[in-house]
Length: 350
Image 1 (cartoon, rainbow, N blue to C red):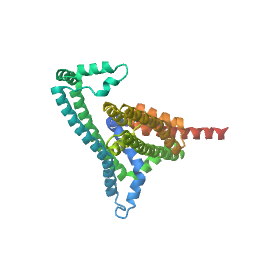
Image 2: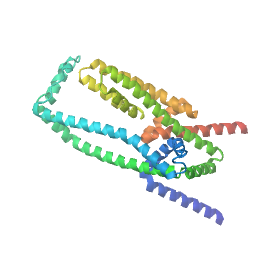
Image 3: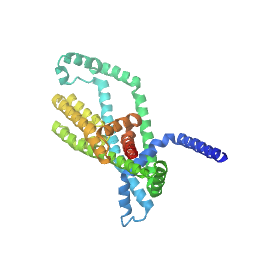
Image 4: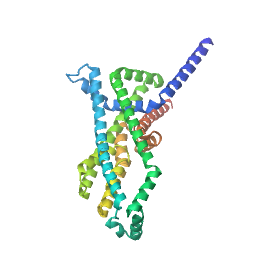
């Protein structure tokens, strides 16, 4: 009786300590999960780096090199995008200054819009057509929260940057102690699920890598196809736009931000047919890639049915954001593996 009470007390104390630890780390759980996802995805590359004659056996140096490489791969494109955004913001500031002096005349194509062309031109003149109207409209926009939005954007940018540095720090330690952590995870899974726990762990690992591979392949494909579309539509810097689209396309449906903006630019310049055709072309590619190609690539690698892969991606994004793109299919793969084992055991017992 005393032994049972001691066992229950230990379980309750351990559970309470686990809850307390989770509460302490709850703000960093997403960052820890990102580090684990990156480590699982790049672990084969890390092992290959360790086998290099110059780094053979140097765990710390290999971990540092790969961590810095991953940081550069992610930060360099984002830094370029931010630099371009700053350049465009300077152009926007100059345009606002000119608008306050002489106003902004309506584009010639605005009046040619069927049914609402004259109304659209008059509305433009009321808001931006003269210096007085432009000053009043810009004042309304500024008082409506533009300055507040800019401050919040800068704050979020700084916060995300330090969060990314934290992820890289955790990633370094995961590389450094990866073998020991892997053995501990396998031991824990064996205790929870028996010998099948090793297979569940392998399925989860394969699902994470398949998700990353699917994102990369879909991103590259979208970048190439839409880059060709930008060139055909007559946009300058189509190769750079295609590369940015490929980066954004790794996130489901995020590529619409790029090709949608390019379409609006073309329409604003009077190229209505080219802009409309580019938007329809990009929408079709996004629809096919995110709803069919990506789930097929992920599900085929882990033997997960198409429907459950698709639901795992969408459900994961809805509940966990971008991190859910990885967690959703991984959870579905493990649950499907457990279900198949349960069905097999039920068939044997029958």
